[in-house]
Image 1 (cartoon, rainbow, N blue to C red):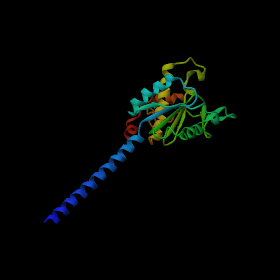
Image 2: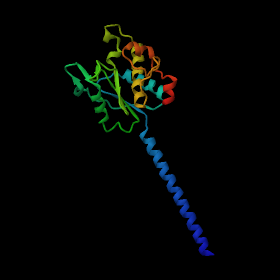
Image 3: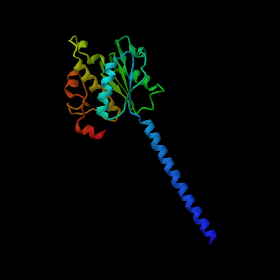
Image 4: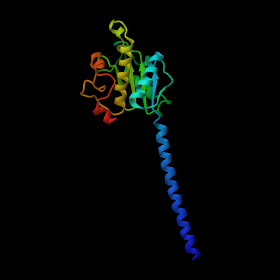
Length: 207
């Protein structure tokens, strides 16, 4: 009789141990997952006005519902400069940001530069994105680039629109055919100004 009781007790202890181990393992995985997903970090690459990062902290939090952090900035991206084109290669800047050891814990990374960007097949780009990192340029978003009087509110809207667009790519969204959706491809600032920084219902459902 005592042997049977001991066996039952041993089985109960063993079952409890297995259950507790499973809970600890699962909790550990969730904790690790939470640790990895600590929001979006903004990385000024070169000199960027604090007002711009303040805008983006508020705007991106509203759109993505993520914690937005302003990280330690990087130096001017002289390594990306193409003398022949007088522009900066956005892909090189993306790689430089990805190589920084302090940024990987963040879910997504947005670099901000104040230089004219390009990729080889296009005359210019407002930004570029990979699966985790995106970069935007402020240069062509200013009215003064086109020899027009500066409009700070319009500049703010354009910065927000291009930031949301490029981050949308990092979350797996492609270009949208809806010209009012932020994921619509901008051939010019007319496209950027028309579409604004909001996702259409179809793209929003994919996030």
